[in-house]
Length: 160
Image (cartoon, rainbow, N blue to C red):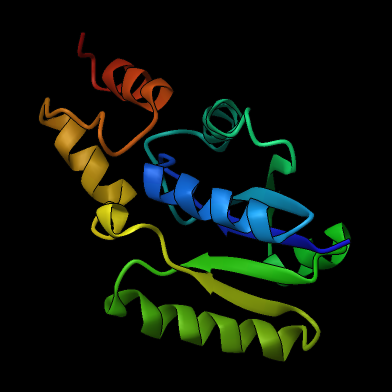
Protein backbone atom coordinates (compact mmCIF):
# COMPACT_ATOMS: atom_id res chain seq x y z
CA UNK A 1 0.00 0.00 0.00
CA UNK A 2 1.33 3.41 -0.96
CA UNK A 3 0.54 5.81 1.87
CA UNK A 4 1.56 9.44 1.47
CA UNK A 5 1.34 12.51 3.66
CA UNK A 6 0.31 15.96 2.53
CA UNK A 7 1.28 18.20 5.43
CA UNK A 8 0.79 21.92 5.89
CA UNK A 9 -0.75 24.60 8.03
CA UNK A 10 -3.94 24.77 5.93
CA UNK A 11 -4.91 28.07 7.59
CA UNK A 12 -7.37 27.84 5.89
CA UNK A 13 -7.61 25.06 3.32
CA UNK A 14 -7.93 26.46 -0.21
CA UNK A 15 -9.19 25.02 -3.48
CA UNK A 16 -5.53 24.76 -4.49
CA UNK A 17 -4.88 22.48 -1.51
CA UNK A 18 -7.95 20.43 -2.43
CA UNK A 19 -6.77 20.11 -6.01
CA UNK A 20 -3.43 18.71 -4.81
CA UNK A 21 -5.26 16.34 -2.42
CA UNK A 22 -7.49 15.07 -5.24
CA UNK A 23 -4.48 14.55 -7.53
CA UNK A 24 -2.59 12.66 -4.82
CA UNK A 25 -5.66 10.54 -4.04
CA UNK A 26 -5.80 9.39 -7.68
CA UNK A 27 -2.14 8.36 -7.57
CA UNK A 28 -1.87 6.75 -4.13
CA UNK A 29 -3.71 4.21 -2.03
CA UNK A 30 -4.05 6.50 0.99
CA UNK A 31 -3.45 10.21 1.51
CA UNK A 32 -3.02 11.49 5.03
CA UNK A 33 -3.68 15.21 5.16
CA UNK A 34 -1.78 16.38 8.22
CA UNK A 35 -2.25 19.74 9.87
CA UNK A 36 1.12 20.73 11.26
CA UNK A 37 1.04 22.23 14.74
CA UNK A 38 3.73 24.88 15.03
CA UNK A 39 3.84 26.72 18.38
CA UNK A 40 5.86 29.49 16.69
CA UNK A 41 2.92 30.36 14.43
CA UNK A 42 -0.39 31.76 15.55
CA UNK A 43 -2.88 31.10 12.80
CA UNK A 44 -6.37 32.44 12.34
CA UNK A 45 -7.86 28.99 12.92
CA UNK A 46 -6.84 26.63 15.71
CA UNK A 47 -5.36 23.34 14.48
CA UNK A 48 -8.51 21.53 15.63
CA UNK A 49 -10.66 23.90 13.56
CA UNK A 50 -8.47 23.28 10.52
CA UNK A 51 -8.95 19.53 10.91
CA UNK A 52 -12.74 20.01 11.03
CA UNK A 53 -12.69 22.23 7.93
CA UNK A 54 -10.47 19.78 6.05
CA UNK A 55 -12.62 16.80 7.01
CA UNK A 56 -15.67 18.57 5.61
CA UNK A 57 -13.82 19.59 2.45
CA UNK A 58 -12.52 16.07 1.65
CA UNK A 59 -15.60 14.15 2.77
CA UNK A 60 -16.24 12.83 -0.74
CA UNK A 61 -12.75 11.39 -1.23
CA UNK A 62 -12.66 7.87 0.19
CA UNK A 63 -8.91 7.32 0.51
CA UNK A 64 -8.12 10.55 2.38
CA UNK A 65 -7.70 10.80 6.13
CA UNK A 66 -7.24 14.08 8.01
CA UNK A 67 -5.27 14.42 11.23
CA UNK A 68 -2.81 16.74 12.95
CA UNK A 69 0.69 16.25 14.25
CA UNK A 70 3.41 17.85 16.37
CA UNK A 71 7.12 17.66 15.73
CA UNK A 72 9.14 16.58 12.73
CA UNK A 73 7.30 15.52 9.60
CA UNK A 74 9.75 12.64 9.06
CA UNK A 75 8.96 11.25 12.52
CA UNK A 76 5.23 11.50 11.81
CA UNK A 77 5.78 9.76 8.46
CA UNK A 78 7.63 6.91 10.19
CA UNK A 79 4.81 6.46 12.71
CA UNK A 80 2.23 6.41 9.92
CA UNK A 81 4.24 4.09 7.65
CA UNK A 82 4.21 6.63 4.81
CA UNK A 83 6.48 6.16 1.83
CA UNK A 84 6.32 9.74 0.56
CA UNK A 85 5.46 13.32 1.32
CA UNK A 86 3.37 15.33 -1.13
CA UNK A 87 4.24 18.99 -1.59
CA UNK A 88 2.35 21.47 -3.70
CA UNK A 89 4.22 23.84 -5.98
CA UNK A 90 2.29 26.89 -7.14
CA UNK A 91 5.07 28.91 -8.69
CA UNK A 92 8.82 28.97 -9.17
CA UNK A 93 9.08 31.02 -5.99
CA UNK A 94 7.87 27.99 -3.97
CA UNK A 95 10.55 25.72 -5.40
CA UNK A 96 13.63 26.90 -3.50
CA UNK A 97 12.12 26.47 -0.03
CA UNK A 98 10.41 23.20 -0.98
CA UNK A 99 13.66 21.88 -2.46
CA UNK A 100 15.55 22.69 0.75
CA UNK A 101 12.90 21.00 2.88
CA UNK A 102 12.91 17.93 0.64
CA UNK A 103 16.69 17.60 0.95
CA UNK A 104 16.57 18.03 4.74
CA UNK A 105 13.82 15.41 5.00
CA UNK A 106 15.85 13.05 2.82
CA UNK A 107 18.85 13.54 5.10
CA UNK A 108 16.72 12.82 8.18
CA UNK A 109 14.93 9.86 6.58
CA UNK A 110 16.57 8.54 3.39
CA UNK A 111 13.65 6.23 2.53
CA UNK A 112 11.03 8.99 2.60
CA UNK A 113 10.46 10.40 -0.89
CA UNK A 114 9.10 13.87 -1.70
CA UNK A 115 6.66 14.20 -4.58
CA UNK A 116 5.85 17.61 -6.01
CA UNK A 117 2.40 18.23 -7.47
CA UNK A 118 1.23 21.40 -9.15
CA UNK A 119 -2.37 22.55 -8.77
CA UNK A 120 -4.45 23.67 -11.72
CA UNK A 121 -3.35 26.97 -13.24
CA UNK A 122 -6.41 28.73 -11.83
CA UNK A 123 -5.12 28.06 -8.30
CA UNK A 124 -1.45 28.87 -8.90
CA UNK A 125 -1.73 32.30 -7.28
CA UNK A 126 -4.06 31.33 -4.41
CA UNK A 127 -2.55 31.17 -0.93
CA UNK A 128 -4.07 30.94 2.51
CA UNK A 129 -2.43 34.24 3.38
CA UNK A 130 -4.05 36.06 0.46
CA UNK A 131 -7.42 34.44 1.14
CA UNK A 132 -7.31 35.66 4.75
CA UNK A 133 -6.32 39.14 3.66
CA UNK A 134 -9.15 39.43 1.12
CA UNK A 135 -11.68 37.92 3.54
CA UNK A 136 -10.62 40.24 6.38
CA UNK A 137 -11.40 43.21 4.14
CA UNK A 138 -14.84 41.85 3.26
CA UNK A 139 -13.91 40.53 -0.18
CA UNK A 140 -15.51 37.52 -1.84
CA UNK A 141 -13.27 34.46 -1.49
CA UNK A 142 -15.83 31.90 -2.65
CA UNK A 143 -13.82 31.14 -5.81
CA UNK A 144 -10.73 30.26 -3.77
CA UNK A 145 -12.01 28.15 -0.85
CA UNK A 146 -14.81 25.65 -0.15
CA UNK A 147 -18.15 27.05 1.06
CA UNK A 148 -17.56 25.80 4.61
CA UNK A 149 -14.36 27.86 4.73
CA UNK A 150 -16.17 30.95 3.41
CA UNK A 151 -18.63 30.62 6.30
CA UNK A 152 -15.85 30.04 8.84
CA UNK A 153 -13.94 33.09 7.60
CA UNK A 154 -17.05 35.28 7.83
CA UNK A 155 -17.57 34.09 11.40
CA UNK A 156 -13.93 34.75 12.34
CA UNK A 157 -14.08 38.25 10.89
CA UNK A 158 -17.55 39.03 12.27
CA UNK A 159 -19.15 39.34 8.84
CA UNK A 160 -22.52 38.18 7.55
